[in-house]
Image 1 (cartoon, helix red, strand yellow):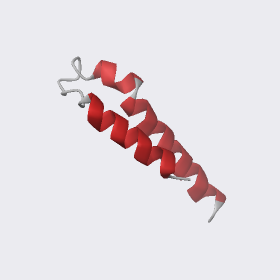
Image 2 (cartoon, helix red, strand yellow):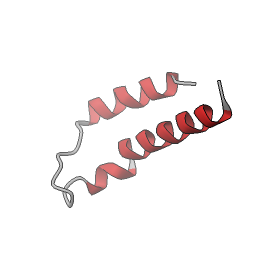
Image 3 (cartoon, helix red, strand yellow):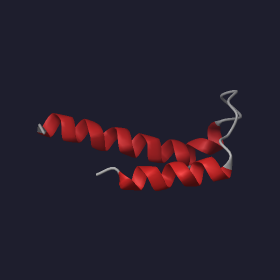
Length: 51
C-alpha cells in the first residue's frame, strides 16, 4: 500500500469517527436526523476493525 493511500484511509477513518461522535451534535442545525445510539455503537465497533 502506498503512503498516500494509507494516509487517505486514516483520514477517512478519522472523519467517520468524528461523524459518529462530535458530528452527531450538529445534525439538527444541518437538517439531518441523528443516528440511533445502537447504530452508532455498531458502526464504532465496525470502524475499530479497520486497520
